[in-house]
Length: 87
Image 1 (tube, rainbow, N blue to C red):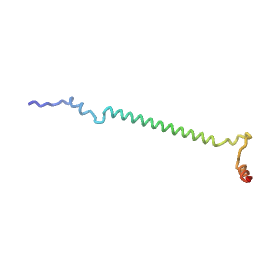
Image 2: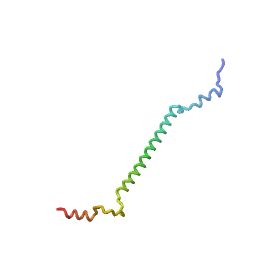
Image 3: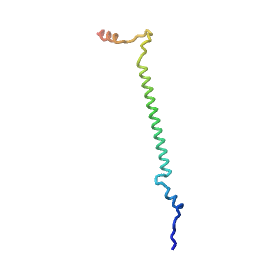
Image 4: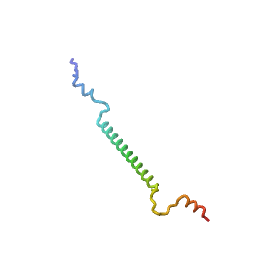
């Protein structure tokens, strides 16, 4: 009776195939990395847009104190007068 033995080179391809190295796992990893990058990029854009909008709101709420253009401004003493002059 003849005993069949495999050579080391014939057994090597079976031993090197990883259980989680399938092309589908690689595609899933690439997809996850892409979606993570997309999400982080969107979050950073949202943060920068929020920061710029809040800076514009702060600038818009404070009128320049040095400009004297002669327009009517309701100051605290004018409001006090209106409050006391009500009938």
